[in-house]
Amino acid sequence: MSAFQSMDLNLVIAENIAWVYYEQGQWKEAEALQVVVMEKRKHALGEEHPDTLRSMGNLASIYKKQGRWNEAEALEVVVMDKMKHALGEEHSDTLTSMGNLASTYWNQGRWNEAEALEVVVIEKRRHALGEEHPDTLRSMGNLASTYNYQGRWNEAEALQVVVMEKMRHALGEEHPDTLRSMGNLASTYNYQGRWNEAEALEVAVMERRKQA
Image 1: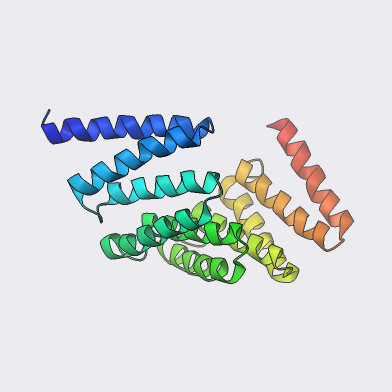
Image 2: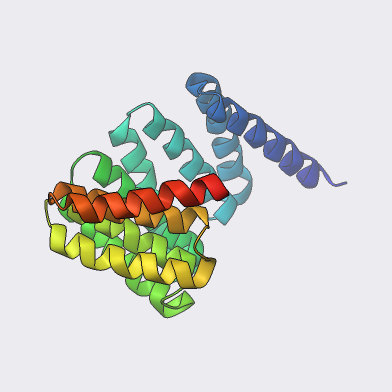
């Protein structure tokens, strides 16, 4: 094994340990390791290497868990721009980075900025993956959530109905993503005071989860 391969293996191990800390809610420990991994990858691979950018994205996720939105956003903007340059606008990693930044905007109540990114992600995933791919459908669900938080119930409902029907077709009635889409639509009905429709969906979700 070369010195470079050995270093890379050590960084993979360190990043895995950082993820264990992340899953346990040990944010400071996760952050400390992830910063080391990111800096070493920058030095060894360069700022635009996909592994460096993924390390930066992981650090942004740790910041988000601590509510450090400005620091997360700063990293995610860099990751998104460099992913676009290195991998292209339609690469799955680029689209994931755009979705991550949209999520940061969403958590700050910056609905217009979140929506703008989410619309782009949907269109590019439709083009690259097709209308019924789970990643496309999850992106549509994210945009529906943004509409919900703006009180745009009709637009949210229209998207959620499409997502639910296509999830059923692509993944089956009892798949967790299908059930989640049904629950999301039920929430939209609840927001509108459409209690009977909400209840019917919620009962269906509960029954299918029992069977699973």
